[in-house]
Structures are given as structure tokens and as C-alpha cells.
Length: 141
Image (cartoon, rainbow, N blue to C red; front, side, top):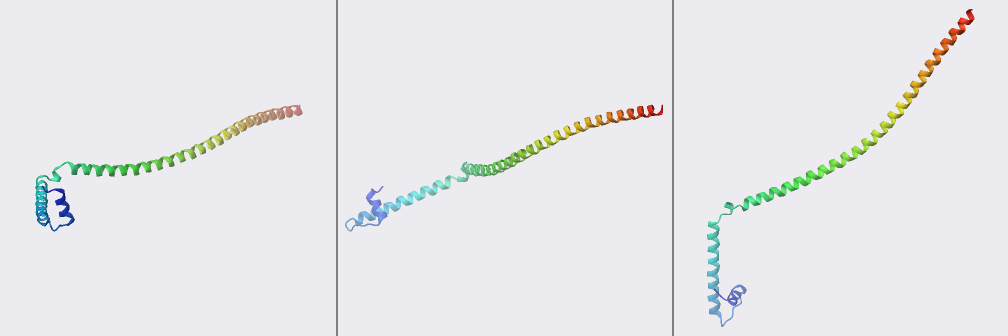
């Protein structure tokens, strides 16, 4: 191969008048090296088919995984939102249920008092009817 100065001179375009011949040789060697490198690349590309490797499958799997990750993230956010809404509804329903239980308890207590009052009134009525019957019996004698 060519030495570093030759490559440097070939790439930088710097030419010295006294080393013109040496530079020309370096250029031609560099061109040969570049052509050889290109030939090897073409040969490797011809022999090695990218589609025949597992890399495309791996890339597809990575893309699917990323897509699934995004979908799961969106679904998780939706479930989180739904859970938050359900929790708020549960809190509201629990408070409403407590109010209903208190109302039912008050109505039950009122109903019990009214039943007792009704029994007392029925006893008073029976007693009044008996007293009126006794009074009528004593007045008729």
C-alpha cells in the first residue's frame, strides 16, 4: 500500500514540484486501492443478501414491539382515566347510599311511632266505646 503522506497528498490535492512523480504513483495506487475496495464491496453485496438474514425479521419485531408498547400505553392511560371516573362515581354513590340509609332509618322510626300511636288510638277508641256503652246502660236503667 501507499504511505500516509501519499494518501494525504492524494486527498488534499497538495502537490510538490519535486515529488510530482511520486505523487502520480501514489494517486494511481490509491485509485487501484479504491477500485479494489469497491470490487470487494460489490462481491460481498452480491454474495450476502440482506433479506436472507434474520435482521429484517428482527427489525420488524422491534417495530411491532414499539407499536404494541404505544398501544399499551394509550390503553393504560384510558384504563387509568376510566378507573379514576369509576372511583369518583363510587364515592358519589356511597355518599348517596348513606343519605338514603339515613332517610330510610328516619322513615322506619316515624313508621314505628305512628304504629304505636295507632295502637294507642285504637285502645282509646275501644275504651271510649266501652265507656259509652256502660254509660248508655246506666242511663237506661
